Length: 153
Image 1 (cartoon, rainbow, N blue to C red):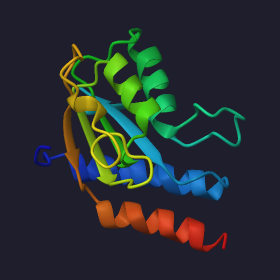
Image 2 (image 1 turned 90 degrees about the vertical axis):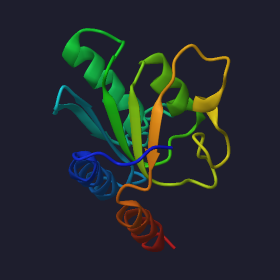
Image 3 (image 1 turned 30 degrees about the vertical axis):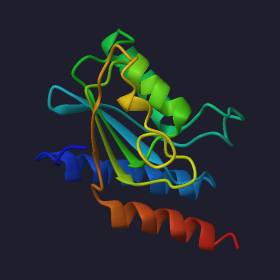
Image 4 (image 1 turned 45 degrees about the horizontal axis):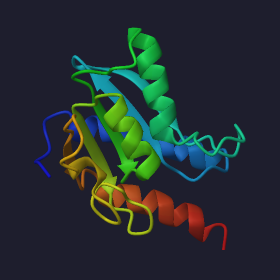
């Protein structure tokens, strides 16, 4: 895990906006932003319920939109900001997209595949390495999730 960089908190705050918008739609509040060359090229929140699609996690949607925006499925040099630690499916997509940096807010002890439950990005068998930074606006990321689930209990 590496240290945060200058734009990390700013772009994570935009991912948090996406998470809040997802919560307003009744989706689990996870948000994601893809940045490349100093600008945001895609942003998304979870849409699994509204799209009736188990793969419609914020990360997957943002990666799809970013690939379309640049006309290439390989997002070389891009950074992905996510409010919570990605799951195994999303970690696999991050590798396939050739993301350079992953920055996420809160750890996910139930499904996190970066360091909590699995360490997918650290596998020596993979031909692509992703630099990961955790804990950026972690308290805010946790609060959005806690508020969402508390309102449903």
